Amino acid sequence: MNRTFLATLHFDGTGFVGWQRQAEGRSVQSEFERVLERLFERSAAAHAAGRTDAGVHAVGLAVSFAAPQRWSAADLRRALNALLPKDCWVESVLPMEPGFHARKSATSRRYRYDVGLDDAAASPFRRRFEWALGRPLDPAALRSAATLLLGEHDFRAFAAKGEPKPHYRCRLVRAEWVARPEGRGVSFHVEADRFLHHMVRMLVGTMVDIGLERRPLADIEALLERGDNSDTSPPAPPQGLYFVSATYPDAVYADEVEEVHATVDRA
Image 1 (cartoon, rainbow, N blue to C red):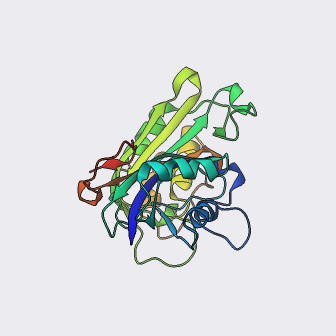
Image 2 (cartoon, rainbow, N blue to C red; image 1 turned 45 degrees about the horizontal axis):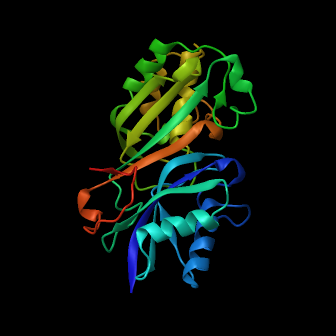
């Protein structure tokens, strides 16, 4: 008999090829499943609320998995943190209702992209965790560009080419540029029902070009009308991107009370 759990995972994506298992390279999923298999003495699958590219970080990636009945949420958190590599950390583990799936049950997902505008962004202690742009951006242009993204649009122009999808429509409920503390630059905060491959990085790359006056603000609306990404700016580098959280309805959480804490958002 198994029980379903939700782990809130942090990781430094620098040394990973991304969340998803790959034919070659070290993935977060393979590390997480390796630990589960060691704990349960059998094969185990872990499912994340979203996939991250190589070099992308997480400060709240929701990961679901099944565990034998004998395991409590608190014991699982302790065991996972004891065995996971040092570039991963589980903030919380919560018991969930049967049938819960971190990706399929999510109603929205949040990302953050950090851009360093000051000279110190080039420091080796910062540049692996942000885009060390090192020059000013027009804040009004950034805000105006982000506002144009709100609502439901076809984001085909901001998606990497690959396998065709049934549709490319996403509904953005938040798209906002915010000043970072201590004059370290700006962050783009975005929340949507779904994201396409490379979508956040391509949005940021295009908006930064607008903020640098390399392209006009009107390009945002023009790109949303395009059927391809041939005129979209190159994607922003991966190290500035963070998976922040996923939102779930209250009904998917188990009723039992345990001494755990979570940053996942309930609808």
